[in-house]
Length: 158
Image (tube, rainbow, N blue to C red):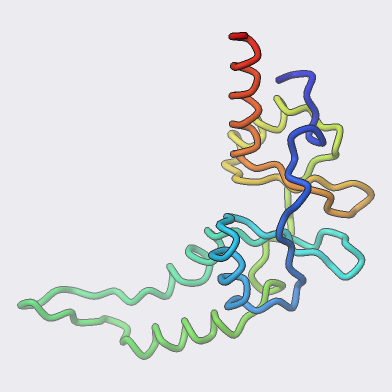
């Protein structure tokens, strides 16, 4: 894997969104395209941030899930279901800009695949945007790394 570069394994076709994309539209992109992350790019193609499926689940919804106890078969909510409804509606009204992670770990197209894999493991990343001249040109995903490892294994066997 050491001689391979990010440009060799990156997904050149990826699903970007702009900062004004609504959360509802982001969710639709995640579902429709069966992806786990969406690079957020400005009109000029420069990377502004990234939104992952985990961002939707943990950053916005998890802290607002109502606490409840099961009392004689009935769920009793501590902070009220209406509070949860308000939080959910607020989430749906927000945009990629409000939700995205701005400090994104990125790599250049000539980054070494082995080093990328190491960073992904160390930082618990699902994806690393590949950026050339501030523009997002592709993404390396865990799947990209696994496919490369499998290909290398098959080549060694042959």
